[in-house]
Image (cartoon, rainbow, N blue to C red; front, side):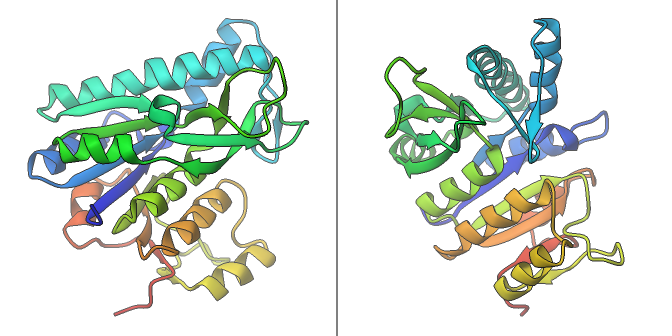
Length: 263
């Protein structure tokens, strides 16, 4: 199972010319072992507005009360997940959609009282993914997770986890050979605006300290470091480029490699 590639996709990489779904179907049909983790924050925001539910963010993360959790679960584990699964299967793939709740795949605890139902993963139980991959399916995972461990009495049994760290945790648990983030930029940007082609652990720490790596790139970088602990190659690439994912698995070009020494 250690020849698995975990791929994190987000709404920012999708558009009229995006080839991610096409690439996923093609790679799966040629026998690649893939696990997809997806987001959908923009769609969640749209549906919260439709329901008249206000949204607030702290440190780039959505504060999630009980009402927000219901909408996020419906959108991420429902609408967004099934749209991705359907699109892959229409193109000849064999995708199966699930969430972190299914098979207790992702167990999580609340990050803070202030954030509400926003969690961090404490345990990964990858058996359901291994069974699906072994049977020839492509798992597509929404990171709505099982609220376990410190759940207060009467609290919901679901909790929302950021898809970026969830992808890193899954890659580590599966001992994946590769973790790939499809983003809307050509890798991690340096202070001069140019992509940093390679980052060691030490360089990552330096760039976080001086503010070069910040905002939405932080959870991706930290997820890469998590995956490195079990030997994965961690990559952050521009998912807007035509067939970026196929090119990545066929050798890759551009983007940022995190932790792996050149050559």
